[in-house]
Length: 295
Image (tube, rainbow, N blue to C red):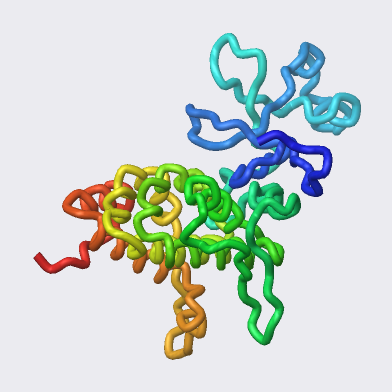
């Protein structure tokens, strides 16, 4: 979609939802011979080798004061190499994968742009409890156009964009009926993008919407089976992310903010409504999942 002159949200060049944070800090290189990470060392020059008669100078400390630590030998990583590897900066552990770390989530969704233009038939109705005021009947909307836009706004973190997107998706899923099934292929990319942010609050909302979408109409669960490879990798990461409080009370269960339990509930709904091929496809992407259907 092209940007227009009256767009308030400017494109964020160089930022992608779910992208890894790139650091400019120097990192050690992995040496396959020693199976460890070593810092690259300078290529030794002729003035750093010991010569005849340097033994007495080394003992007296004169050699170290003029040439530095010339007695230390650099380990060559192999014959014919131009540089050596040395652990002189200290032992460095490999970088952490940070699987549960939040990824970049720039505020440049299509939902935000359409809403700022006034192209969406929704508004916030201020009352004792905020609700959505639809300007047209929901069952008359073009689901191929609006439902992917609303799903793209699910990863928003600011109101009213987040509130309108989530409530709009819920209303469209509740009243859509047979209009939802043909739009499933268009929803995969927004769902995958929201899950790749790895933000627990966003992931919880997406999982709750997936549960409502599976039961919203017939054959929706079976239509999602070919797209498990795009959706389930992130669910596999968060499947065991539970809070162990012992005898304490986890109030996140009531608020449905426990990511691990939401993932398990979503996978069970996928299996129940996904048909005969659902379990084997879930098991392929989430190896630790066990069937919830008694055969």
